[in-house]
Length: 350
Ligand SMILES: [Ca+2]
Ligand SMILES: [Ca+2]
Image (cartoon, rainbow, N blue to C red; front, side, top):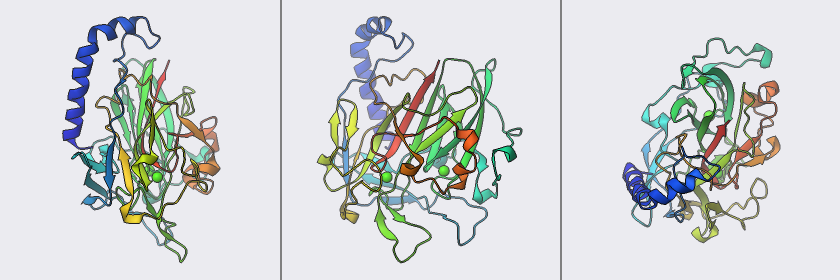
């Protein structure tokens, strides 16, 4: 989403909030969401449709200090494309990484930085800096794997920006000081090579059977030292759905942006369309204050849980070497693991 769209969306939203202001205040006092939340966004979904390939505006966000030919090091480009309604959309997403914001993630496992503890017992969190959200709060340590990129906010404060946006698959450690209740908010991106087409080159390194247009899949898993884990108690909303042969394949049911008839929600059941450079994508505006503790996600869909096999991570050492660190956590995403490419996941810990 462009800045222009963000402002326009914020403006529309603030007008809507002003119109419903007095009603929302009295309604909030009688609902379980509490009076400190913004009014839930009940406006109809505003879809934006694109077709074809985006124009590349950033050649590569991947920085990999150490490489070898066996490593899966992919180019993480950023593009822009104009939707049919005239909105200029940044794909796969506008990210804190692209803006140069931090703090950058601290590595649990990262081949680019040659950090690869053999098991959980070898992992040290002693030198991970603590990010202050509440100076008089408790220190919480967390472990995160995202397929492929995440940025994490606590009560609206940026706490960790994935230093490896696409591949090789990495994992991260975070530490922050906060008081309950607090709100975790993640922007997660399933990156790909074919910008705005929702498809990647798979597998890499390239072999004879490599597909040049393959719909990739996403995933997020995290576990925190206060017992918080990713699971279906989180909310997860999708904002970028591709590849599509026809934008009508996305069906809106209230605030659920669903793709119910495309074979399945995971590989190998998901349809692999042959539209290539003619594929469509459906986008939705990202709310201006999605990181905030005040943001009301009560009418967002629940996160879906997925298995290691569905996510395809059974061979990824960034994750599989440390089962103790992720014990009890579930991989989550919005409802379509393959077609949903930009997801915001939120959880308020009470
Ligand atoms: Ca990553
Ligand atoms: Ca995908």
